[in-house]
Image (cartoon, rainbow, N blue to C red):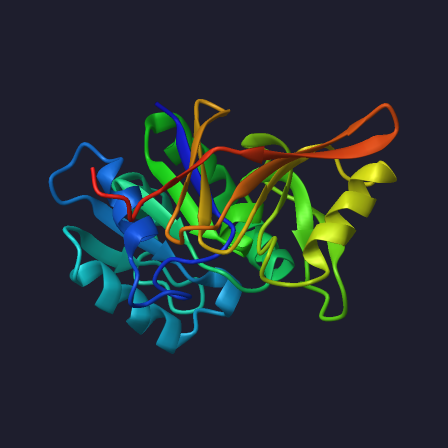
Length: 234
C-alpha cells in the first residue's frame, strides 16, 4: 500500500502530552518497532524541534532517527531514507523546505519511498507537501498558494480551525480557481490516504474535523468528513 497521513496540526510538536496521532501513524506499520525518520527541513533543522521528536518517539514503540540537510549524517540520502518504515515531516516554511528538497533530490527519494510502501506523514508544511497544491504562510505576510509534490490529487489547507484566516482564504482561492478542490484539516485532525484515495479521517481532539471543499455550480461547498476520535475506547 502507498500511505500518506496528513495532519492539519497536532502530534508531538503541538500536543506533547497527547501523542494519539503519532501513535496512530506508528500503528499503520507492520513492523513491531518501526523505523521512523524525522525530516525537520521546514524548521531549518531546529535543534529543539528535533529533540522533542526524539523524546516523543522514544516513548512510543519505534526506532527514531532524523535527517538533516544542514548537517547530513550520510552521503547516501536515498539509502538512508528508503530503509525506513515511516518518514515524518515537520512544520515550518513549506517553500524553503521544497526548494531544499529539490536541490538535494529528496523530492524524488520521497516518491520512491511512497511507491515502495514507506508511510509518509507530517503536519502543516509536512501535510501540504504531499498534495498538488495548498495554502502556505511561507512568505511571512498572509497566505499564498503553493505547489506540492503531487502525490495526492487536489489541494490542502492545514490549521483549518487554528488560524482565523485559513478557512475563508482557502474558500476564496478555490472559488477564484487559484486552487483545485481539496481537503482541509483542523489542528488535531489527520487525513489518511491509501493508494491516493482518502481512507479515513482521525483526530486527537474530540471536536477536531476534516473537510472536503469544492466549488459546485459556482458556490463553495464544504463537506464535513466523518472523523474517528482516537481517544474513544476500542
